[in-house]
Amino acid sequence: MTLRLKTRLTLAVTTLVLVVLTLVSLFTIITFTREQINATYEGGDLISKQVYLQVRQALLSEEIVRPPTNGDSEQLANYIREVLQQDQGVQTLFESTSGYSRTIVYLAVTDLHGHVLAHSDPSQLERPLPKTENFLVLKSANPLKQFRYLSGDQNYEVTFEMMTANDQPFGTVHVAMNPALIREALKQFLNKNLYVAGISLLLATGLAAVFSQFLLNPLTFISAGIERMIQGEFGRPIHLKRRDEFGLVSLKLNEIGQRLEGSREELDTLKGNVGQIVKSLEEKIIFLNPDRRIVLMSPSSAQLLNITVEASLGKRLDEVLHPEHPLHGLVETAFGVKQNLKKTDLSLPNQGTLVTARVHYLEEKNRTMGGLVIFEDPETVAKLENHLEYANKLAALSKLTSGVAHEVKNPLNAIVIHLELLKSQVGSDSAKDAASKSLNVIMQEIKRLDRVVRNFLNFNRPMEVKLQEQDVRPILDEVVALAQSEAHQHNVRILLQTEERLPKIRLDPDLMKQCLLNVVLNGCQAMPNGGNLRIATALHNGSLELSIQDEGVGIPPESREKIFNLYYTTKENGNGIGLATVFKVVQLHDGEIHVDSEVGKGSRFSFKFPVA
Image (cartoon, rainbow, N blue to C red; front, side):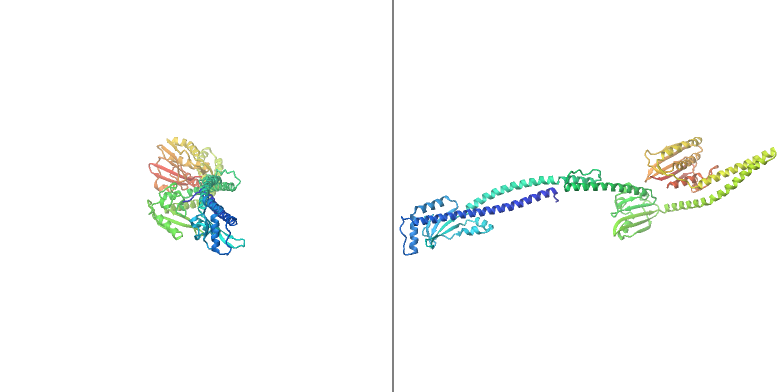
């Protein structure tokens, strides 16, 4: 279990205080014990000296019989014993001291051989005094031994050597003491000391908690600010008005937040641009990160795999596709061998044709960066090749016919001039009338031929495209208004069905109007018995789709591949330039155009333009 910083700090301070209290208490207890032992020893030493002085005074008293002079130690001992037994001062001192003191066990005076000369217990007279440990052993011991000695029931004695006037020893004063009083005093001191230590520890713990709360409270604000940064809320700085390290940290975090906000805006912009590029790509691509999660996906690849871009981004590939999908094995093999792989006959579920899949393994400095999956649809490739071939042929034809048109136009101008001169030179009125009719026919045909040449030159002249981001609905409204006259002549009703919100596309308003108007007029002319012409818009896979559907005669299958060819027309008075111009305008807008038609039921022209 991980403890919070506040709890750890409180425990640390409490532990430190506990250690200090323990050391101080131990030192105090040792000092108190030593003082008690020293005081007890000094009291015993004082009593022993008092006893000595009282014995000496009793021996020097005139009322007492003189001591023996032969120097016999036994007689001397008997003499001293007799004097001490008869001396009232010695007896009073023994009785008062041993009777009222809780420390002193007994008082005794012994001769040089250890026999009792005087004792606070008269029954011990003339007996050998039992051996008792000297008090100096307890006094000079280390603290650990002192506690061990005090825990026992052993008595300790303080002795004092009695000397004659000639400095000759003649006996010893014994003051026997029991350490029970020291133990009791030590016990009381310990209880008091533990009580004080407990109160101090509780106070220290409370103060440590308050101190840690005060000290670490800024961390709460800093933590909340970091959490907001994690959630992406960089616009709310950490308001911590302090001049210490916490204030400096909050300032640094606010600066980091500002930089992250700027970086996020740049990243969002870059991501949006990349997303728009991917959406506008015709190529079917999927970008995977090292965990096989889908980072980017083009709408065409999603359509190929029967999934949606929105539901796939951020998920693992095995979460989006069936575990037995053939793409899994190809991706895992590429990541396993860390090489690019290509499979030309990949069979996808619910797809009637085989596709080519290439997995590009991406790495940098021996670190896996992800993988790029690219699909190639043979049908789409063939269609692009046909478009490219058609565009190349159109470009070559444009170069060739531009020169031919200029060569044709110059003689036509000369013919017109000379016909006018010839017309003015005709003589008689009847001949003039006949010639004028023929000349007028020739003039009209030449003018028609000149108009065809001008249309041809206009088609081959490079168009000046002025693209701008604009909503397509105002253009559709103008197209409908311009086509109303033609629709009325053919008893056609134009129905405009658009979405409420459509994204803007990059377009040239004049060229787009000309393109759509050509298709709408063709639709009206294809319905001799009248009917409905529907114009609809929709947003699909990041592209704006626009459709124009009529209920006319339809286009025969053999003519569908030729309708965009220059000069191809099925109309009696058509010039074959209108739909070729439509195809060219769509290409200039990076768009696509498709035709679906059924004879007797009508035609549908579908346009697709990339969103701006």
